[in-house]
Image (tube, rainbow, N blue to C red; front, side, top):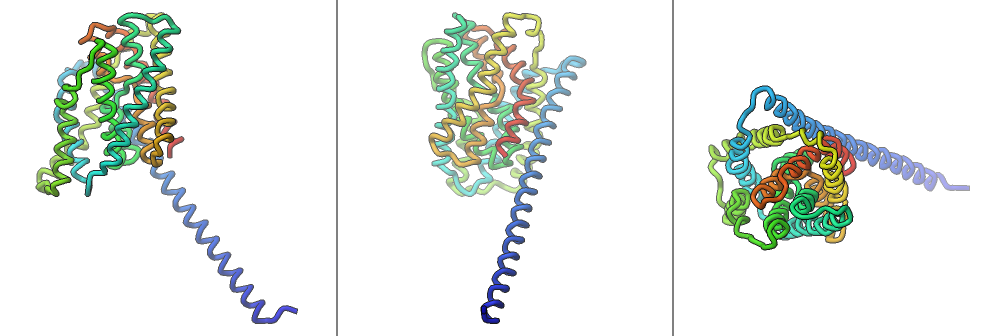
Length: 334
């Protein structure tokens, strides 16, 4: 027969174990609720961005505005300020994280260039059309769409990781991308890029422990809130839907879009796992890779006599399609 003291000890242990289980369940429920709230907020931010983009497209049709002027203003002023503001908010520069994210951005893009070149060969795509197809199926809108998307996903943390990824993207574009278009390589344009300059200035301020005056910091913060709506105005105002009337071009554009929005994120996911990225790093790597074809591809197509009409088709189709793919990735990655 069990002694009373032993029975009492068992009873106390059972009660304590039950209390622990209830506490663990409560904590788990709280964590899940916070995750759901964060995902709902992130999706709401993305939907808001796409609504601004759609409204800009409609407004452009009713009362055209100078998209190129807005583009230059955002790229040369607002985005550099946002980049600088985000970096100066860091306590220190995570050099290892910067290198691994930049390497992931470059490697994922390079892998997909090889894949896209193989698809172009199989489909019999040649000459200038081939160059635009390969670059458009590979290089995404990491800045005008990628930055807002990553900011919506992880806040300032996502913005910083997105910037690090973009360094690898710029190395790819001005290195491999220029080679695809011209057969030669030039990296000088990278170091004249305002985003790279802003990134370098921000890193220097953090390294030297330079404190930004409160008035300037508040000004930068206000500009930061305007950057992403203005970015969506650039994307929405630049949409061209006339390519739907050309059946041959739309089939190739669909092929390139599937590569850009499905296979490139998969390649980024594989590269991220191979180099051991954390969950946050891997999520940003995938989201940046899932952005639609960048307008820079059209600029390259015009500059190097490729096929800017087809480039516009890819930019427009992938931008419209990502309104469905990006929220899906948000759900999967959260």
